[in-house]
Length: 278
Length: 328
Image 1 (cartoon, rainbow over the protein chains, first blue to last red):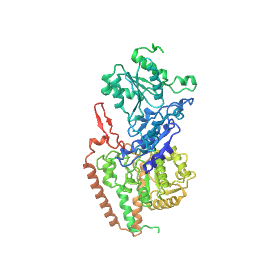
Image 2 (image 1 turned 60 degrees about the horizontal axis):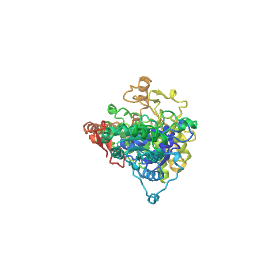
Image 3 (image 1 turned 135 degrees about the horizontal axis):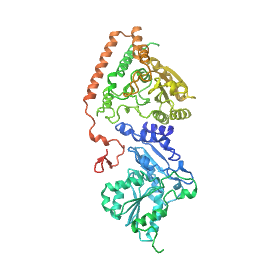
Image 4 (image 1 turned 90 degrees about the vertical axis):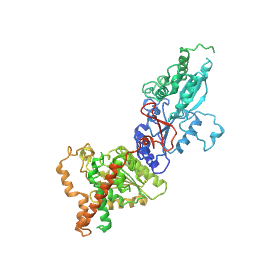
């Protein structure tokens, strides 16, 4: 509460602070400053008080840190008008989106992932420039496909790509969308994809109820892509429980590659087991 | 040295009367600035316009002192487009130059104020931030967090606790283990000030501001004051204290009466002169209130303006999926 408020006050008075939460679990204590002081002030002041602050830190499940240190806050912050909420997956996302967040004049919640910090990625030449930016509010199609749209954010984007590789062997061609931005949510990209593939799965590490996938499914129903669905959309999410500590339990608390494969296969073939030959 | 010059006194009285416009308490839920006038006027006369200030929700008098015209304040209370926040903020959320509201969540404004002070020091300015809160907020953890960081980093922050003896309906003795609010900053030097005496407040603030501007770090000032009315329009204000208590304060310690008696008693002003000021102020208030009741409400399109500074060309979802509103 103290330093989050201090960062917001400094932003109101002309600086561009970056406030780091050691994990977003601790931001729950400071959430009033994020939502009420940062998010709503531009509106309440009819545009006269700006709050160009960035709140960043690791979000979601880690490894062996148990229930109080493993929550995903994408849905919590994504719910609130006045905030922008970003969720990078790879190095390109992290660099381009963080810089965009800092340069953005609005309060941005930047949800990183601890388990991704150590994962290396190839970076194209232009991404290495100090002015490389990615647009806020735009999803990215990581893999094009014809049969099914798989939408995800953060670490599980990688799982979706692995699942897509496996599914390709059975003749199932996945289009994998990396949301990058939770608020604003790029439904246009998702809708365009669903109107091509006619099938939709959302994948997230967070809890199922009132989550990111829930929002995507509701929006699909309200938009032009609904008429293109050949099957109801499915959400693949974390289990609806506090995160357990024991490793074997933790492993089955969140979506794995096999869960994504099974969900896609079931939607397209009606079967959970593969009939594909290797 | 001890008595103010005539121009200051006359101006102070005019300002006090402005703020004591009790007829407009009807419009606002938290409007009752009454009796705190000495605090707001005293502080503003001791700091510079380039200094910064932030307070909680009982903000109308402070807003006036920070330079927002009466018209803009009253029409914000009535939710009109001529309001200082165009009707989008309301009674609790008024902002101006170097003035950050107007904050509805009790205590949140104190770390914000420390942050504003941080920004002054970071940029090498010699301005300070006055961060105001009440006895009701004084036990909030985040206030102590703000104290800690301000002292550690020598931030130019003047913490001001307006102790009006009641946090909503709870008397200070029932709320705080230690009701010496000026001491609650622990390592931060604190002074206790008679919040009913505008000159006392002004001199104390000057002292504190000089201390802070010299780079010695933050200071805490407790202003002992009172609240005539209830906490808000839904609080009659007499279920937790007696009418006699209120009457007694009004007759013995009212800041406007005190200053008037001083001015007249020392020959700096006459009863007639002060009456003239009174009449003039009431006229100004009357005009402003006419405006506040006749100015139109904001256009419906203002519903979706000022959500983001850098707009994203996205539509804002309305009440139903087919109501997609334009953001601006």
